[in-house]
Image (tube, rainbow, N blue to C red; front, side, top):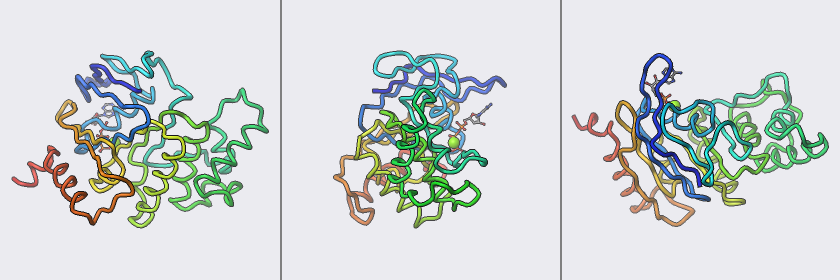
Length: 247
Ligand SMILES: Nc1ncnc2c1ncn2[C@@H]1O[C@H](COP(=O)(O)OP(=O)(O)OP(=O)(O)O)[C@@H](O)[C@H]1O
Ligand SMILES: [Mg+2]
């Protein structure tokens, strides 16, 4: 269980991005965070990944306060962030502790590449990869140590619709293998209803949790079904921007 307790974040320039955020991410579940641009979604994710420090509140992983980056938390960003001078295998192996002998790291990285469908591209350099392949490599790097927590910040938003749909299904398959606690930030309402056990809506300035919606549909989910569409409509009306659309 990953928990945010009374989290606030004020950046060095004085901007208060988040204030009083309480949120529990239950173990083994998929929590999707959605909200208008600038409401603090990426800030929230960077705090959970310890890439930023909160200015108030605490972050707890299994009851213990987080004080820095943890190998138990894997992260994927909107862009792949691969090292351009390393091939796919070495980029993926980078997600593992240097304390492991290279032979073991190599075997684990090869396995992770296979799991994301990059088994035949392990020697490719990032510049030789398509956008989808590069994002698969980023996913493999986050998954390679089988972390119990996986954080994804709009991981598919730069990809075309077909590829996005494919990777959403693959993400669910990977998640179902060892059921990490998963937090996914997205702008995409369909992606939220397709993947989430619970959707958390962030909004306001400073950002805070404005609403939460359980998605109890069985998987696999079909966006054409009426129950799916109803939940999507409820989510839309919970978004602060929906009021702007209606205005
Ligand atoms: N390093 C920083 N210094 C100062 N302000 C920042 C910094 N990073 C983000 N902000 C501000 O904090 C607010 C929240 O930013 P954040 O990137 O978390 O939003 P977001 O919800 O992820 O937006 P988007 O949907 O566009 O990705 C924004 O107003 C942003 O300008
Ligand atoms: Mg963002």
